Structures are given as structure tokens and as C-alpha cells.
Amino acid sequence: MATIKPFRGFRPSAHADKIACPPYDVINSAEARQMAQGNPYSFLHVDKPEIDLPEDVSLYAQEVYQKAKDNLEHFLQTGVLKQDEKPCFYLYAQTMDGRTQYGLVAVASCEEYDKDIVRKHELTRKDKEDDRTRHVATLSATTGPVFLTYPARAEIDEKLAQIASEFPVYDFTAPDGIKHTFWVIDDLQDIRFLQDAFAQIPTLYIADGHHRSAAAANVARQRKAHNPKHTGQENYNFFLSVIFPANQLYVMDYNRLVKDLNGLSKTDFLSKAAQKFDVAETGREKPQKRHEFGMYLDGKWYTLTAKKGSFDDQDPVAALDVSILQENLLGPVLGIGDPRTDKRIDFVGGIRGIGELKKRVDSGKWKVAFSMYPTSMEELMKVADAHKIMPPKSTWFEPKLRSGLVIYKYEDK
Image 1: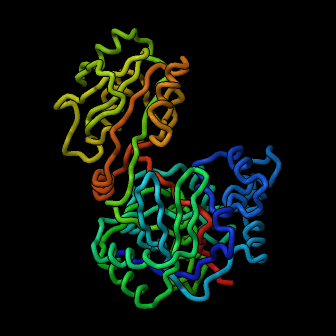
Image 2: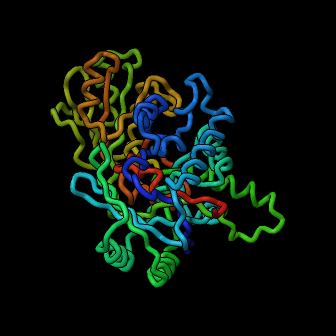
Image 3: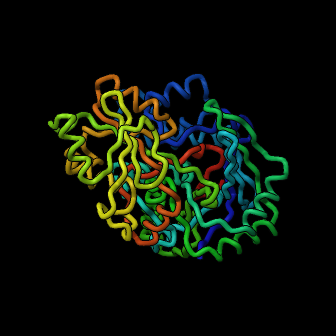
């Protein structure tokens, strides 16, 4: 069963549109400085606190985490963020290109994360995990929500649709054109209904936010070890999440660029590619189905189709398109051994468009680009259910969850 709990969230008393910001890990420090310039309300002052310190300060210096804590305390003390009087769930809707997805904001269980009831599909990087662990521990709060999903259930959809018919507390369109709408769920009957409904769901899946959830679980273990009266119900045993039904989510392609042909001529490269793929010059930029790939090389678009028998269709990881391309072409032909660390490969999320691939190859700085068919939610769940890990850069979810609409503190005010 999936345990979720309502909580007394701290959220904007006003200026929600100015407070809400992109996740900390999708923009760099320079972009954050520019985005928050002239906006004292921006939650980037908490999630990217280096923007308020000299540029030569290390991102991992203790003063960065202390600055985050100081900025959060300032928001609380001045009433920029105020705490709800009783435990609530919240409903968070995002609308992009006419599509709306509705997520329930709740806290999920760190213990169930450890027990794999909250399932993962990605490895974490130690430096990034340590960074978020220190952020959570210093602030005694999870400020950036983890993006969770579950197989859709009609009774939950109907309840959330009913709540969404009521007047929201926040409703704004961000500069990127994404509309964000937010409701408070404080009716006790609604809360009990939703808790009971989620208790019937055996598994939750992390769609995005592996480092945030790992950090919260790390802090929970640390505090448990130092609390002789630990009960499992302390606030530190839970983490902030937004939980969406899988059938509403939009997974975009996560495309690849490679610097060179690994010393091969174009003719030799195409010949080697043809050993595992059917290669055709089609002019088509995007693949139309699984196991098909677009390839942009020397101003032309090719379609690559994986040959039967070139991969294990029964293995949920080996059957992923990102695995097929890596194991049959990027690795053995182009020499990309570890795509996590190899400087000869780069990744471009689908939100930036196919034109970005063409532009970068045409610039001469990159030799070949591969457009991918998006990984499906079914594929993601199969990998997680098999307790396996996806290759890096397998999924790109849009829209991204904004931070600052509600936060979860471990100590009530």
C-alpha cells in the first residue's frame, strides 16, 4: 500500500507567480541569478541560494546552505510564506499546449522509499545526492517536490476533478507559457477518501526527483539514528511530493549528439550502422514508433530501424530505445563507453525541439545527432518493477513542477 499524508504546508500569502520558480536542477547558477534579478520573492533565493553570494563561492560551501536557511526563515518571518492551520492535501494542475495534468500534493513515506514501495528507475550521482541531503538537513524541510506517478484510478480522477471545479487559491501563467493552478484540500472527508484510495495502490513510481527523494530518505535515517524516541511518525519520515496519474503525463524525447564519427569515414560509419539497423535516407526528422531513430548527418535526415534479434525484447532495460542505440551504435561504433561521463556526447531534451539538433550539427561543433522516440510510462514502470535501472537521460518530463507553491517543514511554526 502507498502511504500518503496531509500536512500543514507553508505557502505564499500573495505573489505566488513571483515566488514560484523552476526546479533547482534544470537551471544553472547564472540563469538563476538572471531569473531572480529584481525579484526578492523568488524561491530561487532558497533553492539556488548561491545567487545571493559572491560568484566565486563554491556551490557546496556551508555558507550556501546557511544562506538558504536564512532566506527561508526570512520568508517565514515576514509572512511571504504562511502555514496552513490544519493538515491539508493540495491539488496542483499544470497546463501546457492545451493539455492539463492534475497532481495530488502530499507527503510520501521515506520508509516506503527504502522498502521500494516508492520505486526508482535511475541511479543518483553522489555529489548531487550529498548536495540535496545537506540542503534538506540544514533547512529541516523539503522545498522541491518529488514528481511521483501511479497507474490511474477512476475514483481518484473523479474526486480530483470535483475539487478542480472549485475556485483555486493560485492561478497564473509563468513566463514560459505554462499555466499553474493550485487548490487547498482541507475538507476532512476529502482527505480521508484520498488517503483510503491511495492505500489501495501497491506502488508509487518516481518520475522525476531521484536526488530529492534520496536526500529526504538520507535525512530521515540520520534523524532516526539520533532520536531514541523515534516512532516513525515524525515529520522527517516523509517528503514533499506531487502525485500524478500515469495516463496524464507527457514524456518527451531525450535526444543525443555526438562530436565525431570515432575516426570513421561517413561511408564506413553508415556501413557499420547497417549491421544492426536498417538505414534509409528518408528526410524524416522524428521517429514514428519504438525501435526507430532519426539521424542527422551532413545535412541529411536518415531513419534507423533496429533489426530483429539485435536486442533482447524480453528484458525491460535492453528493449528500451536508449539502450538499443547505446549498445548497438553509440558504444561499439562511435566509442561512447560511459554516456554519463563521456565528453563526446551531449543530450538535448525534446522541449528544445528538433531544430536544436540540426543547428548544433550544422554549426560544425557536433558531427551527428539522433532523435529518439519517447520512452513510455509503461516502459518506465516495467523497469522499476523489475528493480532495474534505466540508462542515463532516458526520460524528459514536461512541464516541470514549480518550487515554492508549498513547502514541507520538519518542525511546525
